[in-house]
Amino acid sequence: MCGIIGLVGSSDKFPLKPGIMVYRGLLRLEYRGYDSAGVGSVTSKGVQILKGKGSIRELEKKLCLSCIDGAIVIGHTRWATHGAPSDTNAHPHTDCNNKIAVVHNGIIQNYQELRDILIGKGHIFRSETDTEVVPHLIEEIYRRLGDFYESFKRAISMLKGSYAIVVITSYEPDKLFFAKKDSPLIIGLGDGFNLVASDIPAILEYTRYVITLRDNWIGYVSSNKILIEDLADSRVVEWKKLVRTVEWSIEDAVKGGYPHFMMKEIHEQPRALKETLYGVQRDPAIVKAVELLARADNVYITGAGTSYHACYYYSILSSILAKRLVYSFIASEYSVYASTADKPDVLIVVSQSGETMDALKALRAFKEKGVSIIAVSNVVDSAIPRESDLAVYTRAGPEIGVAATKTFTTQTLVLSWLSIALGQGTGALTKSEAEYYRGWLKKSAEIVAKTISWNEALAMELADWMRKKRSVYYLSRGIGVPIAMEGALKLKEIAYIHAEAYPAGESKHGPIALVEEDFPVIFIVPEHRELEKALLGNIQEMKARGASIIGVAAESTSLSNYFDYWFKIPSSHWILTSISHILPQQLLAYYTSVKRGFNPDRPRNLAKTVTVE
Ligand code: M6R
Image 1: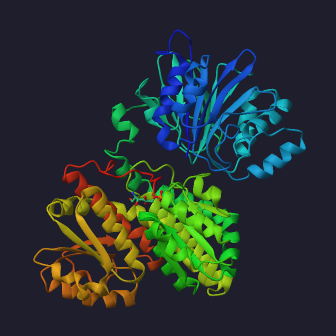
Image 2: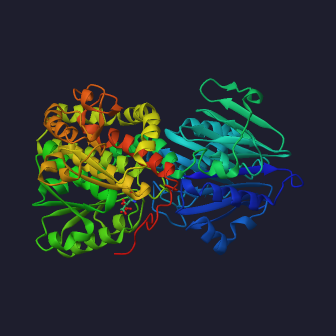
Image 3: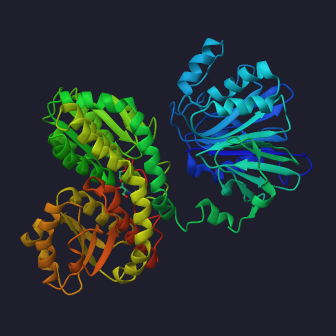
């Protein structure tokens, strides 16, 4: 995910200096990415670019992004996908002659192929990004056609993948060119100026009139003209009917209309899963990881908090799908495990931020023993992937809420994919069995979207009852246990209610002593006949002591008669348990926190990234 803004107008009409307008817009897009940023404008000598690695505020101090001159300016804040965060990989990217500058959000799938052709024609590339092919491709076509807009259209029609692209050029210094497919882009209409941006917050300070662009739309805006065409059928789009007035305040808009980042991130999960799936399907690191894991003597997996729950989930999946025992441990306990680790072993380190000190320490301790390290992270080029032999990335986009939500579901998606690949690689699964499981993972976004819409109202209602409780149990068996643990962590972390998770079979060995009338017990019921059968006895023993039973179970469950409340999950497959069954628990924790008067985005005593031991 990246953020884009572009601005064009007559010098006397801007409410502020264009450089300042773009800089302020970028700050509002920072939630989309923050590892590098840049701005560009058209001058008499070509395009002028200021860009670099670091946050927008750091770069403002270093380069004064807001000082950029000109009546046509573009800006970009990056969340690295192709190429680590660096000064050269930051956007805008330019052509060989510095006449065309491009900002892009999305992924160009055929960039390598286009890059090879363009290099063959003498183009010099400066970055490792997929985006850089765009200015060179336009330049190449423009050499022949001499018509910029036509060259831009032809270049865009050669791209495969997803993109929101904005281009400025000294060949046509009064127009902002844009194209959109699968990545968001809007036009903002000002008085004597117009804007293009990834999202409403970037432009809301300057206008409330917007047009939301659709896929395959392409065109340009100048100070007083807007042209939109549909690339699919070359039709000119009647845009006047599409202008709408935004009702949000600036404050609302930063969270995209959601009251908290956590809520926004819960709702972003279908898209985060889709993007992660797209990445993992094509990631050569998965093949290399399977090679390493297949020949390892022992496999360990570690992380902290939510990431540890993803590790535990992987260890269960690995024994089911790859018939491979994996030791999962909490990162801060690394010394127990590192002491026996040896060279032919592999350690998988899972960390959303890639910077958690406990996980980093574990990594280093194992590395010292000669163990190969595989990182699973959401942040490209963060410390953990950097120090690992191999990195696989989730593509959840920046997570701002302290409580991990979309990064947990995307982590377990990646780890599920890996265990299927390992199962197939070691012969534990046949090709068709592996395809069958992968088929279910491909449905994850759809299942999650349905699960949210089916359960939000119940979560809100139940939160009213839950907010008065002092203690809650989260129980499950097998693959459901780490999901119960993650649910309990969510409630504890943001609603400050004591919540404990354990395998349901343990109840009678102690915890049941606490159960009394109306004590909440949440049962995570994976869609698996044997586990359901085994959980029935545990539900009954809790009910017999007066507990109120909240079931998180598929619509096909045979246990619904035992539930006092039922979070209904669309029927799918147990392999999706980590993705589908966690959703109602995220929602319940969120609403309970809000009803108790807390801010779920800023839980007390916690930081998003824990860089201390
Ligand atoms: O960035 P990491 O995944 O390494 O972070 C690990 C934990 O600090 C993190 O998951 C924490 O438990 C979350 N706040 C839980 O919601």
